[in-house]
Length: 397
Ligand code: TTP
Ligand code: MG
Picture 1 (tube, rainbow, N blue to C red):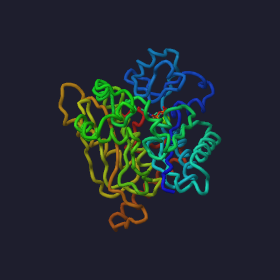
Picture 2: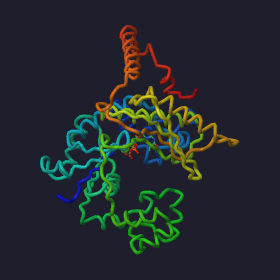
Picture 3: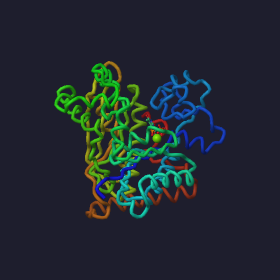
Picture 4: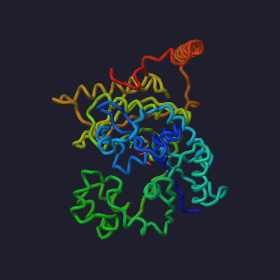
């Protein structure tokens, strides 16, 4: 089998769908999941709310102007993380080659699964059925021979979509797609490209590679290849990854440090969960920030010992963010376009040799964990919140 079979799976209106599933009163109604305060941002909008123009990353006030009857629900991250785990456990049964992209999204390489489970399109519909049966939620799936096409395909018939693009149909699939869907084309580059008369992927085809490189630099090379469906990126399962990160590009620049900190906390929590899932530890924490002028910085800090928990990563990440924030001295808070939290220098938990020093610490931490567990058992779960995670819902400090 020389052709790859790649699936891209993305849950539909994930946070809102979980809320509608858990609360029947919300079903069929426009729902906005996000912060209620005057600075709140929409995490996601149910499909009913999207018909009014409400979108992820939109200020809540603007979304409520578009759809005043919408019901606002405050995010319950722990709930979404639990459902996400359930979904990933289902995916695990179809292939070990899973690359998680976010809490509700993953690439699967099912090339090797086909002998046992049938053709990729049958695997895709099997996954959709299982997810629906076990979680009551719908996912959209794209099936193709590359990551790029699979991701485009999963998006095209959302919600509850299943789009299969065989190798021989790639050209016909890509040609009519708007150029805004091209990887690397954002609100800033779009006008420049459209000015050249390039509105669809098909419009790129007459351009030679040197011409595109001359116009757009390295991005031009990517445009040339992707417009022809050429993408040889492999699906990298977490157990083989050299780093892991979560990033978000805000639709609107965000200056509120509380919102930025809350986003980072969610991101690093998810990264930590991914590490635990593949039994790995990380020694280095990375912050990535891009400002509206496209200036991108990364800051990193090395931990005393490799870890896989939010409790260890979060204070370090918060400090990196605080230092970056303090360094940028402007009259107003610096606005952020893209924000990301990640880890590098990964080691397998099993390979890791505990030094004597590490062991002593490890035991101290285990003792502390046990003590906390005992108190929780006696007085209930809410009795103790570790200092480092306090303020999860209101991360201002
Ligand atoms: P997405 O998969 O981008 O969005 P979605 O699942 O809500 O909707 P769909 O895929 O059907 O278009 O993101 C997954 C979840 O991540 C989303 O439910 C909420 C969260 N999220 C944010 O908190 N902020 C954001 O800016 C985005 C894009 C997503
Ligand atoms: Mg989704």
